[in-house]
Length: 207
Image: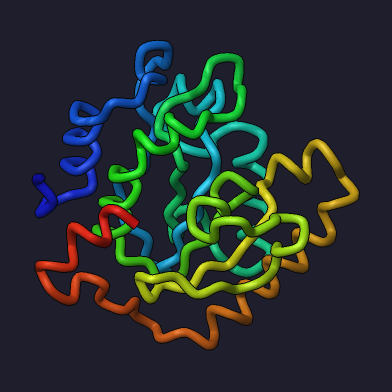
């Protein structure tokens, strides 16, 4: 398996071809970012929506604008963070991604994680949280940190879309982002090198 990519663009172009996700048959294009985050923060959502499908970039719709507001509230801009999704293609009619679709994009997401080497992974919503902390409930877990086998901490958050559907959640989400900022202050300025030994890479890709 090719994993030593020079750029994120190379990585995404490779996996856009070498993946078996059935969603590619109905989506306009894969959705991804190509610039690593200067802050070391990696946000992971559920799946692209209509706007993302058309533009080829994650979180460019209403939920993305709210995410930008939340980031600004703790002194960050979108350009400083990295945003991805559990699946890289829009599900038809914005339905939730199926387990087999998430599994088909699993190695792609893991390769992305290995390349970016984030200081912290922030799952947005239950699908992303379940990917990294199986069995966790987003309602009970948001605003909390969890350990992960890669050594990269997981900090659970509601998906920004949840605040749009239920405005009562917005204040709590702002509080969670303040908690994220405090948590980041406790972490090393640089991420741990999760590419410790060459024989571990394949295992990390399968996590």
